[in-house]
Length: 96
Image (tube, rainbow, N blue to C red; front, side, top):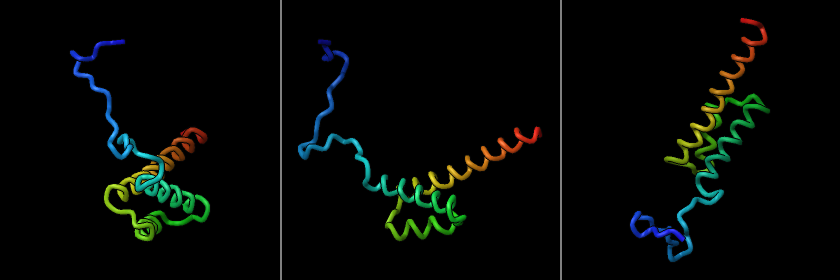
């Protein structure tokens, strides 16, 4: 066993309520991820407009603050990268 007394190492403590400080699946960030997924799915399957659907879905599901920012970045970031990838593939396939 290693002596950690000099290194300043201290093992993590559990809170009295059993919470170890780690985020669980679901919760607010899970909701934000689900909103992003649902918007992206609607864009893909129904040609929905993300800029119209995302704000209404955030309101309906009561996602605010940092979680709304996460959902927004996941949604628009995915669409941005998808568009860039499509452009790259188009250039490569046409030889431009």
